[in-house]
Image (tube, rainbow, N blue to C red; front, top):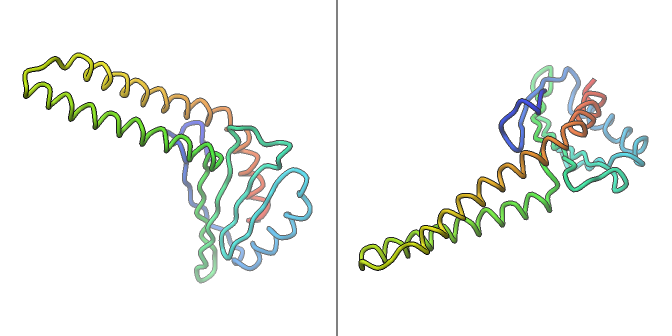
Length: 163
């Protein structure tokens, strides 16, 4: 997978493994104890979550979520790279605030326009919201680019478990 070429902020992928779900989960449990100093691996049913240890974790560090689906002779693994949950929540909160302010001032601009009042302030605030939204997107892209080497580390760890 090449996350640096992906446009999505949370890249998704799908791979096949010839191993069964149980065998993959056993390897994950084994690696969980072996690599406890560098990684945190959470196993919940047929979902695996890979995180960096607190010592290696940065604010832009990604995590990897794997969902295992058993087929006849193979296992389909659906993966999702994402930012730290707290950071993602903050970005979503900021997006909703910006969208809310945009809508409020758009309605106010329409109201002022229909009443033939000045809409300069409304248009300025709407413009700032658009600029802030674009700025948030580029900040997220920069953070994801900083995390690409760690994404490759997590991907290598994933392939150790799937082999």
